Amino acid sequence: MRSLAAVGLIGLLVSGCTSATLQPSSDAYQTPRDKALLAHTPYAQVTVPQTYQRHIVDYTGRERPGTIVVDTSARFLYYVMPKGKAIRYGVTVGEQGQAWSGVAQVGRLQEWPEWIPTADIQKRLGPYPSHVAGGPRNPLGARGIYLYDGGKDTLYRIHGTNQPEYIGQAISSGCIRMTNEDVIDLYSRVRLGATVIVLPPGRSV
Image 1 (tube, one colour):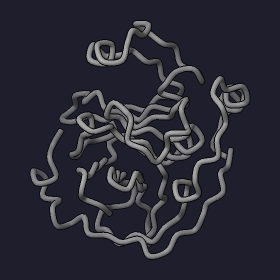
Image 2: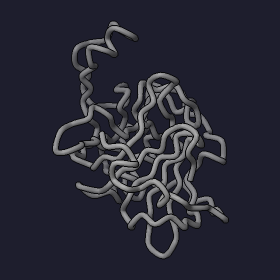
Image 3: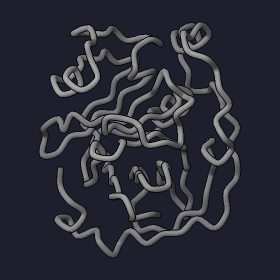
Image 4: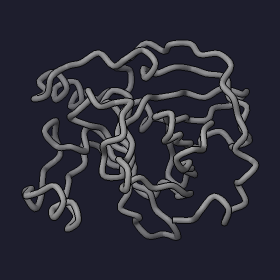
């Protein structure tokens, strides 16, 4: 994955959010399958703290609309929109030693993705089944946004979760987790080839 310096983005990611408007959660982008699966989740429903609920915010960064910017320090993901606005979502980020940063592109999009645990995850956290079918018990949740670099899968994803209680924390194995409702919303907006910028710890929007 390319570093921010390698693509000349140091100095460009200077942005600020001066106002925020809570955007009520909506099922507008949910398919009938989504509604059926989310109506019977095996995990407890929780209320995410309002800070980490979906907001429309002012955004003065220079990234083009359609770009995703992840602020790992603040636990926010921004989807850049036109006219100086962005949608800000609360996320779970990688724990210490597992976090990553850099620039990638959206190389694949998948509804209710399957999960094939990597050898590293099996070693550190397993044992897990070698394959977990898509569904509400799958830790990748309702959507998978796969990050590629130079046409190759980085193995990092932005995805849903079956542990919404951890939104706003740093406990993942490096991937960016969102509530299933939020990742469905983001998925409906993002396009293949979109740029994804993940800021290192200590750098904030």
